[in-house]
Amino acid sequence: MGGIFGETGIKGGTMNWLAGDEAASSFPYFCGWMASGYFVVGDIRDLGETIYQGDGTGTALNAVAFAPYVGDAEKTINTVRKIVSKYPDQAGELGIRYSREFLHLVPDPIKRAVWEQTLSARENAIIAKLFSEGRSGEEIRLMVISEKGLVKEYLERRIIAYNNVGDIANKFYASKKVAVLGKWIENSQLSYENVGRAKGANYYFTKATLPVDQRWPLNKDFLDLAGENGKIILCSDPADAISTPSTFRDEIQYLMSKGYQAGPEYSETINGVTYLFWDMVKV
Image (cartoon, helix red, strand yellow):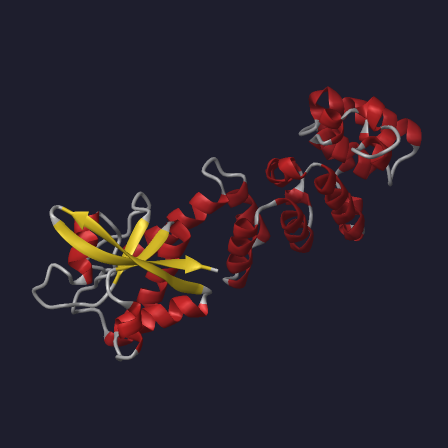
């Protein structure tokens, strides 16, 4: 159907009344629309019907082979952009479907451009980071279409890598959606690690055997994971911390460089002990 109606069949088009939004926003429609630039009308009619009848992942796509798209990336990207602009609520679903059905057939720049049009800002930030780390588009595509989804797959891999560092004294748990930062206070229940335990939160703590030059890079990994996995809260006054050199100050400054700022003070009582907290909010 996409090969017949093309842009005229999507929402706002002159033939949308006939094509219908359900069909026009579907992956088979996209296949037919894309292929229509490369085949004669009769071929498109037959190919589009074959795809629409359920062969969108097999014979029809293999026949198209998407070879021409490699040389006409702009057509592919523009078509995706037009469909998503008309059906924004289905963008994520379309991005996963495109990733599963045809993005393995095109170069990485087209993969990335399609993801930019269809996936969320958070997912695209993860994709950008993965590319910067040297991951291939195909490896990223497999993460996008995984049963867990890109965000969870990415976080789980990072958490496993973090926890595999031998000198980590306590593991990071994805199930704990809060991470506590604060000052270390010897023999005090208000020391950040004790607050973290009381609250059932993640907190950064390493063994003394971890070399000094490795502690801050690992600390930054913890902060990144904490922000991606949930909420970061402070159990020590950030205003006081800024004036005194400490790891806690370094953590606050790092988070501020990432766009976070401390929210207002509030109190919470846990097991009979009242604590003061400040949420770190990304703005």
